[in-house]
Image 1 (cartoon, rainbow, N blue to C red):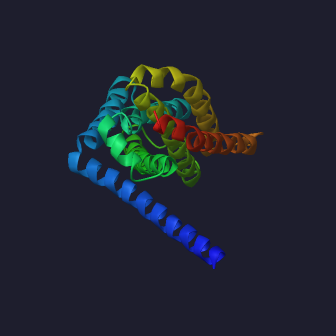
Image 2: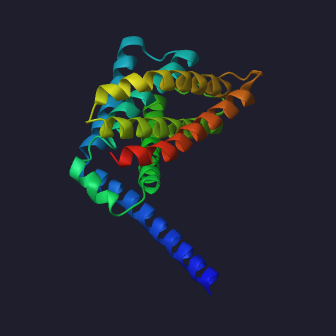
Image 3: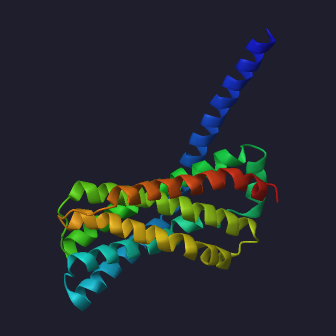
Length: 233
């Protein structure tokens, strides 16, 4: 009887955690849709950047096109994803503390940030193709890499935003901690994307892909392990 009761409690807790997770993601998406200023502001930034590059240099070659795309994704992540925790008031954190587990809250923020980043990446690809040409040889591979890159940038900047938010809203801390993490991440993504541009054999491509996946998993695991300590502050 005791084991059955314990199993019932575990199932109930898992259902509640899943419900809270979905509710948190839905809440962030609804807030983003109602405000819209961040969404359209990032779209305006991407469109103006691509247009200025086109007016100054026309359609660049494939390698420059690749570098510009990932730099654009970096600034998109900084202007949209990095604000996921910084825009939450301190009193609201105390309210969330009474409702959900810290790991559920962090993972919900990461999923929301990933969805937003994927949308921005697709919009960037459309704008790049219209104004800066389409030098891709393997379109599906580049789209897949951009999706994985969206997950990577979202995970990193969401975790950094959580640290900055719990450190008295210190956005400078996020920039200081983010530089050594984002630099190798962008280099890996740009090197992986070269295969979708240049139809030549590239040794070590799968090793780079494995390093990227391990880096993403490491950031997510560190966030789940460390965020509860920040949550209690």
